Length: 126
Image 1 (cartoon, rainbow, N blue to C red):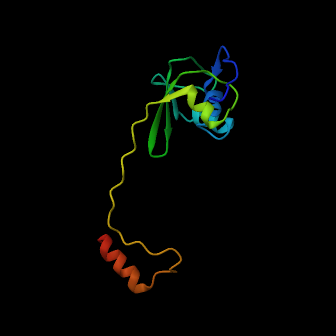
Image 2 (cartoon, helix red, strand yellow):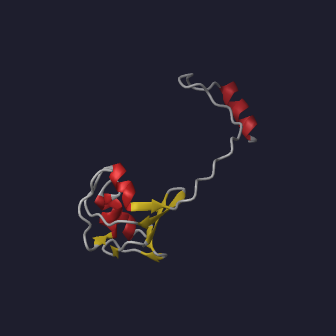
Image 3 (cartoon, rainbow, N blue to C red):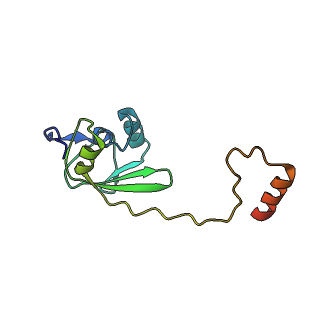
């Protein structure tokens, strides 16, 4: 296990989400909090709100919601392996999209001809 820095007494939610690599930058993390995409224990979180061990964090991302439980507080960004020891991920698995049977063109096959386009639209039901 990679060594982690000493655990601080309190950490802002935007800094913690950035440190565990949920967001690429701290400013993106702050923006997500301001936009209402982050909830702490089912309550909307402000960027300056502090987290404590045992809190449940819900982070809304396009298409799904991540559910994280705080296991350790860190304020500095660490490697992905070390960051994974600071939270427990309770996110349910994403549903697999059913294959619609739509035709797939080979990569690099060029632009579809008018006949190809009509066949694709017929198969889609248009």
